[in-house]
Image (cartoon, rainbow, N blue to C red; front, side):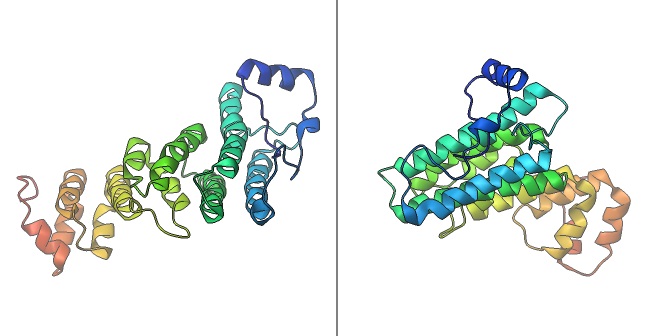
Amino acid sequence: MSRILRSVSKPFLMVLLLGCSLAGWAQGTSYPYKVAQDRMIWHDKVDQAQQRLIDLSGGKSDSMVRLTKDETINLQITDAFGRQVDDLQQQIEFDSTLNTNGKKRYLRGLESLLNGFGKAYQAKEINPTLGPDLVQAFIEAMPLDKKGQSILPVVAAHPYAVGNILVDCFLYPSENPGVKPSRLLLTRQYCEMHPAQILNYLSRHPGLPFEDSLIIVAGHYDIGQLYNFAAAGNELAWHIRNSKDSLIH
């Protein structure tokens, strides 16, 4: 199936790593179960995204995803992006409650998850230790999406970097109803993580429902910057001047 290691337990992984070459289990696009021809391309895209993570981490020789200096964590990351993603592919392919378009939707989502993680890792926007958390978030979100329910609770329950990738996994061909509120939540989380950027962001995106609370965060972080923005003649300046927070006032 994919070129990612499919072992079940960490002890077994360590035996394989220490005792033998892992080249034998790489199966390319040969699947241990029957895949419908019109979905083969989507399974292949997932496998190719898995392989890119191996290549990114320099694991071509043994197919490990090595993104940290801790081999135990690397094993967990490899298991998440390998065995767990492979299992999801099989689960999706055999899901009798999904039509072919539904199956393609979630295969596309898996590809987006893998590619999104790779890009975020390269941009230093996600700690690689969050890889297993990201896969778990997808596992939690998929049943909600199948029922047409919002994925917002899943996004809210996981770190910002995980949620930021997850929302892009449920856009096509139709957007999950939780994507828009999730993006608002993520915007707030991002601003709270980077208080020095809040006022610049609010000046470019006026009218956010939590604008007043972010102004308070920004003001308590840098009162001098707040004073400069309050002197402008725009909507943001009005909100600053009318804040009920004692320090801002």
